[in-house]
Length: 330
Image (cartoon, rainbow, N blue to C red; front, side, top):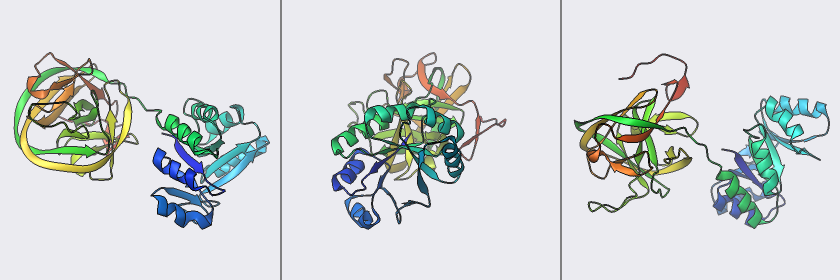
Protein backbone atom coordinates (compact mmCIF):
# COMPACT_ATOMS: atom_id res chain seq x y z
CA UNK A 1 0.00 0.00 0.00
CA UNK A 2 1.35 3.41 -1.03
CA UNK A 3 1.96 6.03 1.63
CA UNK A 4 -0.11 9.11 0.84
CA UNK A 5 0.79 12.51 2.28
CA UNK A 6 -1.20 15.72 1.82
CA UNK A 7 0.66 19.02 1.57
CA UNK A 8 -1.05 21.72 3.64
CA UNK A 9 1.84 24.18 3.53
CA UNK A 10 0.76 26.98 3.07
CA UNK A 11 -1.70 26.12 5.86
CA UNK A 12 -5.22 25.16 4.88
CA UNK A 13 -7.38 23.56 7.56
CA UNK A 14 -9.73 21.98 5.01
CA UNK A 15 -6.85 20.01 3.51
CA UNK A 16 -5.91 18.56 6.89
CA UNK A 17 -9.54 17.64 7.62
CA UNK A 18 -9.80 15.94 4.22
CA UNK A 19 -6.57 14.03 4.83
CA UNK A 20 -7.92 12.77 8.17
CA UNK A 21 -11.33 11.78 6.82
CA UNK A 22 -10.06 10.13 3.63
CA UNK A 23 -7.35 8.07 5.36
CA UNK A 24 -4.13 9.78 4.28
CA UNK A 25 -1.01 8.63 6.11
CA UNK A 26 0.45 12.06 6.91
CA UNK A 27 0.15 15.80 6.36
CA UNK A 28 2.90 18.30 5.62
CA UNK A 29 2.34 21.51 7.57
CA UNK A 30 4.33 24.53 8.82
CA UNK A 31 5.92 24.05 12.23
CA UNK A 32 3.62 26.60 13.87
CA UNK A 33 0.53 24.60 12.82
CA UNK A 34 1.44 21.28 14.48
CA UNK A 35 -0.78 21.99 17.49
CA UNK A 36 -3.69 22.85 15.19
CA UNK A 37 -3.38 19.50 13.43
CA UNK A 38 -3.41 17.64 16.75
CA UNK A 39 -6.62 19.43 17.67
CA UNK A 40 -8.28 18.14 14.50
CA UNK A 41 -7.33 14.47 14.85
CA UNK A 42 -4.60 11.83 15.00
CA UNK A 43 -2.39 11.69 11.92
CA UNK A 44 1.37 11.69 11.31
CA UNK A 45 2.77 15.19 10.89
CA UNK A 46 5.65 16.02 8.54
CA UNK A 47 7.32 19.22 9.72
CA UNK A 48 10.52 20.49 11.29
CA UNK A 49 9.26 19.36 14.72
CA UNK A 50 6.73 16.77 13.55
CA UNK A 51 6.52 12.98 13.86
CA UNK A 52 8.48 12.81 10.59
CA UNK A 53 11.06 15.58 10.74
CA UNK A 54 11.57 17.64 7.61
CA UNK A 55 15.29 17.87 6.87
CA UNK A 56 16.15 14.99 9.19
CA UNK A 57 13.85 12.11 8.22
CA UNK A 58 12.72 13.44 4.86
CA UNK A 59 14.33 15.76 2.31
CA UNK A 60 13.25 17.28 -0.97
CA UNK A 61 15.30 17.21 -4.17
CA UNK A 62 14.76 18.26 -7.73
CA UNK A 63 16.02 16.11 -10.60
CA UNK A 64 17.82 18.04 -13.31
CA UNK A 65 20.90 15.94 -14.11
CA UNK A 66 22.12 12.33 -13.77
CA UNK A 67 24.20 13.55 -10.83
CA UNK A 68 20.97 14.55 -9.07
CA UNK A 69 19.72 10.98 -9.49
CA UNK A 70 22.88 9.63 -7.87
CA UNK A 71 22.49 12.02 -4.95
CA UNK A 72 18.84 10.98 -4.45
CA UNK A 73 19.81 7.31 -4.43
CA UNK A 74 22.48 8.06 -1.81
CA UNK A 75 20.03 10.00 0.37
CA UNK A 76 17.37 7.33 -0.10
CA UNK A 77 19.47 4.81 1.80
CA UNK A 78 18.72 6.66 5.06
CA UNK A 79 15.87 9.11 4.41
CA UNK A 80 12.63 9.52 2.53
CA UNK A 81 13.22 11.67 -0.53
CA UNK A 82 10.46 13.81 -2.04
CA UNK A 83 11.38 14.12 -5.70
CA UNK A 84 10.55 17.19 -7.78
CA UNK A 85 11.31 17.52 -11.46
CA UNK A 86 10.32 19.80 -14.29
CA UNK A 87 9.22 16.74 -16.29
CA UNK A 88 9.27 13.49 -14.32
CA UNK A 89 7.00 11.62 -16.74
CA UNK A 90 8.19 8.06 -16.20
CA UNK A 91 11.86 8.05 -17.20
CA UNK A 92 13.58 9.82 -14.26
CA UNK A 93 11.37 8.06 -11.73
CA UNK A 94 11.86 4.69 -13.39
CA UNK A 95 15.59 5.11 -12.85
CA UNK A 96 15.13 6.10 -9.21
CA UNK A 97 12.57 3.41 -8.34
CA UNK A 98 14.87 0.78 -9.82
CA UNK A 99 17.74 1.96 -7.60
CA UNK A 100 16.15 2.84 -4.24
CA UNK A 101 12.91 2.33 -2.31
CA UNK A 102 12.39 5.55 -0.35
CA UNK A 103 11.08 7.69 -3.19
CA UNK A 104 8.10 10.01 -2.76
CA UNK A 105 6.83 12.14 -5.62
CA UNK A 106 4.67 15.25 -5.69
CA UNK A 107 1.43 14.83 -7.66
CA UNK A 108 -1.24 17.40 -8.37
CA UNK A 109 -3.86 15.30 -10.17
CA UNK A 110 -5.23 11.76 -10.37
CA UNK A 111 -3.50 10.96 -13.66
CA UNK A 112 -0.06 11.74 -12.23
CA UNK A 113 -0.88 9.79 -9.05
CA UNK A 114 -1.82 6.70 -11.05
CA UNK A 115 1.28 6.98 -13.24
CA UNK A 116 3.62 7.30 -10.27
CA UNK A 117 1.90 4.40 -8.49
CA UNK A 118 2.45 2.08 -11.45
CA UNK A 119 6.05 2.83 -12.40
CA UNK A 120 7.95 -0.45 -12.77
CA UNK A 121 4.75 -2.21 -11.57
CA UNK A 122 5.37 -1.49 -7.87
CA UNK A 123 5.53 2.27 -8.23
CA UNK A 124 7.09 4.83 -5.92
CA UNK A 125 6.99 4.35 -2.16
CA UNK A 126 4.73 7.31 -1.55
CA UNK A 127 2.82 10.24 -3.00
CA UNK A 128 2.67 13.86 -1.84
CA UNK A 129 -0.59 15.42 -3.01
CA UNK A 130 -0.11 19.13 -3.68
CA UNK A 131 -3.51 20.14 -5.10
CA UNK A 132 -5.16 22.91 -3.03
CA UNK A 133 -8.75 21.72 -3.64
CA UNK A 134 -9.93 19.37 -0.82
CA UNK A 135 -12.50 17.72 -3.13
CA UNK A 136 -9.85 16.72 -5.65
CA UNK A 137 -7.47 15.68 -2.89
CA UNK A 138 -10.11 13.36 -1.44
CA UNK A 139 -10.70 11.75 -4.84
CA UNK A 140 -6.99 11.08 -5.34
CA UNK A 141 -6.67 9.51 -1.88
CA UNK A 142 -9.76 7.35 -2.38
CA UNK A 143 -8.59 5.99 -5.73
CA UNK A 144 -5.02 5.28 -4.59
CA UNK A 145 -6.05 3.71 -1.28
CA UNK A 146 -8.58 1.45 -2.99
CA UNK A 147 -5.85 -0.19 -5.03
CA UNK A 148 -5.85 -3.53 -3.21
CA UNK A 149 -3.35 -6.29 -2.86
CA UNK A 150 -4.63 -9.69 -3.98
CA UNK A 151 -3.84 -13.25 -2.92
CA UNK A 152 -4.09 -16.33 -5.14
CA UNK A 153 -6.71 -18.32 -3.29
CA UNK A 154 -7.05 -22.02 -4.05
CA UNK A 155 -9.78 -24.66 -3.90
CA UNK A 156 -9.56 -27.11 -1.01
CA UNK A 157 -11.49 -30.37 -0.78
CA UNK A 158 -12.84 -31.22 2.67
CA UNK A 159 -11.33 -34.46 4.02
CA UNK A 160 -12.93 -34.58 7.46
CA UNK A 161 -14.87 -32.59 10.04
CA UNK A 162 -14.20 -34.00 13.52
CA UNK A 163 -15.39 -32.93 17.00
CA UNK A 164 -12.39 -31.54 18.90
CA UNK A 165 -13.67 -31.16 22.45
CA UNK A 166 -13.74 -27.89 24.38
CA UNK A 167 -11.31 -25.02 24.00
CA UNK A 168 -10.84 -21.28 23.83
CA UNK A 169 -11.85 -19.62 20.59
CA UNK A 170 -11.33 -16.05 19.41
CA UNK A 171 -13.88 -13.63 17.97
CA UNK A 172 -12.15 -10.81 16.09
CA UNK A 173 -14.36 -7.71 16.05
CA UNK A 174 -13.11 -5.23 13.46
CA UNK A 175 -13.89 -1.59 12.75
CA UNK A 176 -15.16 -2.48 9.27
CA UNK A 177 -18.47 -3.89 8.02
CA UNK A 178 -17.91 -7.03 5.95
CA UNK A 179 -20.21 -8.64 3.41
CA UNK A 180 -20.77 -11.92 1.64
CA UNK A 181 -17.59 -13.79 0.79
CA UNK A 182 -15.41 -11.75 3.16
CA UNK A 183 -13.54 -12.94 6.23
CA UNK A 184 -10.13 -13.95 7.59
CA UNK A 185 -7.67 -16.64 6.53
CA UNK A 186 -7.09 -18.96 9.50
CA UNK A 187 -5.05 -22.13 9.87
CA UNK A 188 -3.44 -24.54 12.30
CA UNK A 189 -0.32 -24.27 10.12
CA UNK A 190 1.40 -21.13 8.90
CA UNK A 191 1.50 -22.64 5.41
CA UNK A 192 -2.16 -23.55 4.89
CA UNK A 193 -5.22 -21.41 5.63
CA UNK A 194 -8.99 -21.69 5.22
CA UNK A 195 -11.18 -18.64 4.58
CA UNK A 196 -13.46 -18.19 7.61
CA UNK A 197 -16.52 -16.09 6.78
CA UNK A 198 -17.61 -13.00 8.70
CA UNK A 199 -20.81 -13.11 10.77
CA UNK A 200 -22.57 -10.96 8.16
CA UNK A 201 -25.22 -13.57 7.31
CA UNK A 202 -28.81 -13.51 8.58
CA UNK A 203 -29.49 -16.44 10.91
CA UNK A 204 -32.47 -17.61 12.99
CA UNK A 205 -30.07 -18.19 15.89
CA UNK A 206 -28.26 -14.86 16.30
CA UNK A 207 -28.38 -11.37 14.84
CA UNK A 208 -25.74 -10.67 12.15
CA UNK A 209 -22.57 -8.98 13.31
CA UNK A 210 -20.92 -8.00 10.01
CA UNK A 211 -17.89 -6.56 11.78
CA UNK A 212 -17.02 -9.92 13.39
CA UNK A 213 -15.16 -13.07 12.39
CA UNK A 214 -15.47 -15.98 14.80
CA UNK A 215 -12.01 -16.99 13.72
CA UNK A 216 -11.08 -20.15 15.60
CA UNK A 217 -8.99 -21.57 18.41
CA UNK A 218 -6.46 -19.37 20.19
CA UNK A 219 -3.38 -21.15 18.78
CA UNK A 220 -4.42 -20.51 15.15
CA UNK A 221 -2.50 -18.38 12.70
CA UNK A 222 -4.01 -15.54 10.70
CA UNK A 223 -2.45 -13.22 8.14
CA UNK A 224 -1.73 -9.59 8.99
CA UNK A 225 -0.45 -6.67 6.85
CA UNK A 226 3.20 -6.73 5.92
CA UNK A 227 3.22 -10.37 4.83
CA UNK A 228 3.31 -11.71 8.39
CA UNK A 229 1.25 -14.10 10.49
CA UNK A 230 0.14 -13.78 14.09
CA UNK A 231 -1.52 -16.08 16.59
CA UNK A 232 -5.16 -15.24 17.26
CA UNK A 233 -4.31 -15.21 20.97
CA UNK A 234 -1.92 -12.26 20.42
CA UNK A 235 -4.41 -9.91 18.79
CA UNK A 236 -5.84 -6.90 20.60
CA UNK A 237 -7.66 -3.63 19.95
CA UNK A 238 -5.77 -1.36 17.57
CA UNK A 239 -3.96 -4.19 15.76
CA UNK A 240 -4.59 -4.84 12.07
CA UNK A 241 -5.53 -8.10 10.38
CA UNK A 242 -5.72 -8.94 6.70
CA UNK A 243 -9.31 -9.30 5.57
CA UNK A 244 -9.82 -11.27 2.35
CA UNK A 245 -12.78 -11.85 0.04
CA UNK A 246 -13.58 -14.88 -2.09
CA UNK A 247 -11.70 -13.37 -5.06
CA UNK A 248 -8.53 -12.90 -3.01
CA UNK A 249 -8.83 -9.11 -2.69
CA UNK A 250 -7.16 -7.92 0.52
CA UNK A 251 -8.38 -5.22 2.91
CA UNK A 252 -6.53 -4.16 6.04
CA UNK A 253 -8.92 -4.25 8.99
CA UNK A 254 -8.38 -2.50 12.31
CA UNK A 255 -9.42 -4.52 15.36
CA UNK A 256 -11.80 -2.88 17.79
CA UNK A 257 -12.13 -5.78 20.24
CA UNK A 258 -11.11 -9.41 20.72
CA UNK A 259 -13.32 -11.88 22.61
CA UNK A 260 -11.93 -15.16 23.89
CA UNK A 261 -14.49 -17.65 25.24
CA UNK A 262 -14.60 -21.37 25.96
CA UNK A 263 -16.70 -23.23 23.39
CA UNK A 264 -17.09 -26.69 21.76
CA UNK A 265 -14.75 -27.05 18.78
CA UNK A 266 -14.46 -28.81 15.42
CA UNK A 267 -11.34 -29.81 13.48
CA UNK A 268 -11.74 -29.17 9.74
CA UNK A 269 -9.19 -30.84 7.45
CA UNK A 270 -8.90 -30.15 3.73
CA UNK A 271 -6.56 -30.87 0.82
CA UNK A 272 -5.51 -28.23 -1.70
CA UNK A 273 -3.64 -28.39 -5.00
CA UNK A 274 -0.23 -28.25 -3.28
CA UNK A 275 -0.71 -28.72 0.46
CA UNK A 276 -3.22 -29.61 3.13
CA UNK A 277 -4.82 -27.11 5.47
CA UNK A 278 -6.74 -27.42 8.70
CA UNK A 279 -8.42 -25.18 11.23
CA UNK A 280 -10.04 -25.69 14.60
CA UNK A 281 -13.26 -23.68 14.70
CA UNK A 282 -16.22 -23.31 17.03
CA UNK A 283 -18.80 -26.08 16.64
CA UNK A 284 -21.79 -23.91 15.76
CA UNK A 285 -24.14 -23.43 12.81
CA UNK A 286 -23.18 -19.76 12.54
CA UNK A 287 -19.49 -20.49 11.86
CA UNK A 288 -18.93 -20.64 8.12
CA UNK A 289 -16.25 -21.19 5.52
CA UNK A 290 -16.49 -19.90 1.93
CA UNK A 291 -17.31 -22.28 -0.92
CA UNK A 292 -15.89 -22.04 -4.44
CA UNK A 293 -18.84 -19.90 -5.53
CA UNK A 294 -18.01 -17.31 -2.89
CA UNK A 295 -20.97 -18.29 -0.73
CA UNK A 296 -20.83 -19.02 3.02
CA UNK A 297 -21.26 -22.64 4.12
CA UNK A 298 -21.76 -23.65 7.75
CA UNK A 299 -19.08 -25.87 9.28
CA UNK A 300 -21.75 -28.19 10.70
CA UNK A 301 -23.01 -28.87 7.16
CA UNK A 302 -19.61 -29.59 5.63
CA UNK A 303 -19.09 -33.09 4.27
CA UNK A 304 -16.04 -34.85 2.79
CA UNK A 305 -15.74 -33.88 -0.85
CA UNK A 306 -17.15 -30.37 -0.40
CA UNK A 307 -14.97 -27.60 -1.82
CA UNK A 308 -13.99 -24.44 0.05
CA UNK A 309 -11.57 -21.57 -0.50
CA UNK A 310 -8.18 -21.34 1.17
CA UNK A 311 -4.63 -20.11 0.74
CA UNK A 312 -1.22 -21.79 0.59
CA UNK A 313 2.09 -20.26 1.66
CA UNK A 314 5.15 -21.59 -0.17
CA UNK A 315 7.57 -20.77 2.66
CA UNK A 316 7.76 -21.54 6.34
CA UNK A 317 7.49 -18.95 9.14
CA UNK A 318 9.63 -17.97 12.10
CA UNK A 319 8.12 -15.47 14.55
CA UNK A 320 5.58 -14.64 11.88
CA UNK A 321 8.13 -13.87 9.14
CA UNK A 322 8.69 -15.91 5.97
CA UNK A 323 11.88 -17.97 5.98
CA UNK A 324 13.46 -20.53 3.67
CA UNK A 325 13.62 -23.44 6.06
CA UNK A 326 12.17 -26.91 6.33
CA UNK A 327 9.51 -26.97 9.04
CA UNK A 328 6.97 -29.72 9.62
CA UNK A 329 3.69 -28.74 11.28
CA UNK A 330 1.06 -31.38 12.05
